[in-house]
Length: 229
Image (cartoon, rainbow, N blue to C red):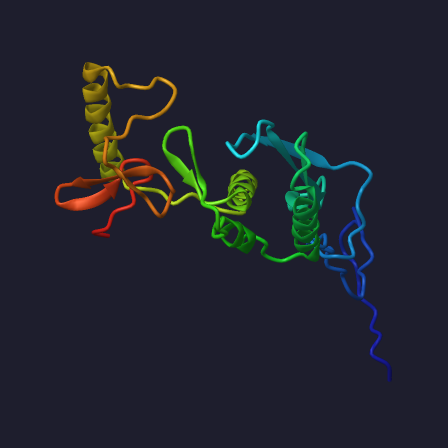
């Protein structure tokens, strides 16, 4: 005998559906990651940064182009894709061109490219670096390019800022306000740059001459770095 049995229906049929043998699960969109086989689109989103150094009479313009991955989806994100550096001063064109090609190749390779920031910022010019407005020391032109790259990566969310505690921020603000007030009284205040006390030492973390003795501890009035932890 078969297993088919007649079923008596005693109520009126108001609706029906056909049962499928298997229900197909919805396919989640595949998230695309940066890799070297992604072709360059015809259009990229670019950001240009201007830097002016005492090494040249002409400014330098650094353009970083981003590629948009997973456009139109919840996974949409921007990643650096290529970098160009332009200036009227072509004296250092050869090594700058080589540097931009290497950086661009690392971008396109995929993976974490944030290591480039520290690698570039730790390059020191054997002839000595230079000070920027506000007492900021730059060890080399390469280091300044690294700083621009750091700014860009923070903007993209690839690097996160190190947050100081509210108490630490308040203490630094109080000390800076006190020092700036003293500078104005003596007529030494500079409206174009932050005022740090004479004799301040160079902070190795932010490269600013703002490291002073505070409460028995060497502390940077610019970034908050402290020798006492």
